[in-house]
Length: 138
Image (tube, rainbow, N blue to C red):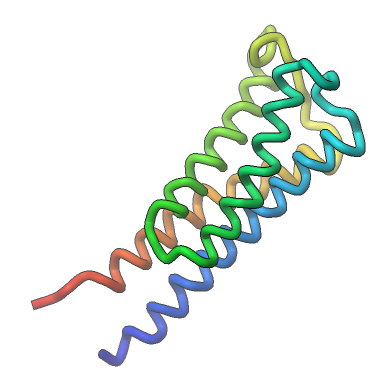
């Protein structure tokens, strides 16, 4: 089919963009835990949540590139929505998220928010592109 190669390239480019966005968000979370001692140190739930975001994000980014299933894309959308949603709750709820308050300040917050939004929008777009590419028309 004449339109199949551009559609495949578009789907792959979107998948690669989503993998990059998830990886950057993951690295920012690891940076905050390792270099900035963010999360209150060992024993605090936020410390473990940031570790999970960091390690899980790196693994998810790898899966996005090597496993051509829709599941990693769905995981990327959930990763972005969960992480960005948690941050927004911590910023805008009066008592924060489970007692943790945050604010829009500094490059880590902005980089994370932007990459997580890219993971959400890009993940949905990649799912649509891959679904359109595999659709059989009769």
